[in-house]
Amino acid sequence: MVISVIILLLFIGMAFLMMKNKVPTILALPILAVLIAAVARVPFYGENGIMNVVFEAGALRMSNAIVALMVGAWLGELMNHMGVSKTIIRTAAELGGDKPLLVTILLSIAMVVIYTTISGLGSVIMIATIAVPIMISVGVKPLTAIVVFIFSYGTGLTINMTQWTYFTSVTGVPIESVRAFAFTMFALTAVSTLLFILISFKRDGMKFSWAADDQPGGGLPSAAEEDPEFVKPPMISLLTPLIPIVLVMVFKFTILTALFSGMLYCFLTVWLCRPQRKKNLKKLVGYFTKAAIDGVNDSAIGVVVMIGIGMLVSALTHPDVSDALTSTMSSILPSGKLGFVLFFAVLAPLALYRGPMNIWGLGGGLATLIITMNVLPAVAVMCAFLSCERVQVLSDPTNTYCVWLSNYVGTDTNQILKKTLPFSWSLAILGVVLTTLLWF
Image (cartoon, rainbow, N blue to C red):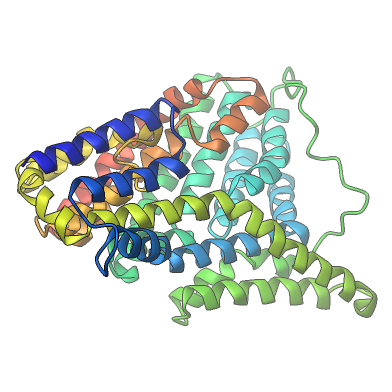
């Protein structure tokens, strides 16, 4: 009992330090893993010791998710270097013409498509510097424009296959179950995005057809300015983000094979549809190589965080730790449907500020601990945390992309939180209710 209380206090204390930005996530997770194992009197040496279980096995536990993250980032950077992402955004803007609502919706759809394949701060900066000024130039308020971007980003990430691999690695739930619920949350988030756009247009007093004449664009750089060295890829290349999803869903490809196939499709369609193929081949190969390096750099923080999560998960699933926590956690966790809904619905905002419901941090360890106790169905726990993840992705002020976007338009991350939390918390609650209906 004493050991379990100390472990829970360590958990709460580290969550508090992370929320206050006193300890970065990349340090907090491995430190907490070692402390938890030490408190449970796990020996340092030996087959089941801290050295083997926490450091060695823990660091490698998320290897599948880490590789998927890096390959996905590689594909994303390749799309950037080949001009695919940029062309998708500009094509959407051109189709919308001077109708602000249509432009905003089409840009949102384009960004959703892009982020089904790529992620990371580098891609956010590249896409946002094109899409956000376009929205502002047709009359959308800067804060509304970046929140639309965040909603679109979050919607696309829901069916980003690198995310599926991560959830499977953390919870042990089959990827088919992850995928099925991810598409449900994708649909709900897409509807929420559309609702946010319509409500914002109504609240801001914007017309639903034609652009206002008094919007100067906020002084941001024009996205319409073409790079003189930019060569527009062929239209067939714009299907690149959808290729991996189709290969996995229809042709049952593995995720890594589908991502590599997406890279090959992007490269070949750009190369074969360009004139002077022999002359351009060397340049495109250079893009391919640079994309690999940039992809590794862009995913570096995510890789380090996953190593820490793997160590924490390994510590929490150690028999000495799980045995110590079972009795205490059993008295806290809900057992019935109503208790399950209330527990996760009320605690969903704890996914903010790197809190314990954030599956990309301490929540990864918490989800694993709950699953190993066999108190609740594993699939239900995964779905509940995936629902709470909506709060983190759409609203967390500590997200690096939220910080960058708020600085880009001269606002504050707390304004993003106020705009998005009613939607993200509602999404979490809907997800938990659906989880109860599907898996209890």
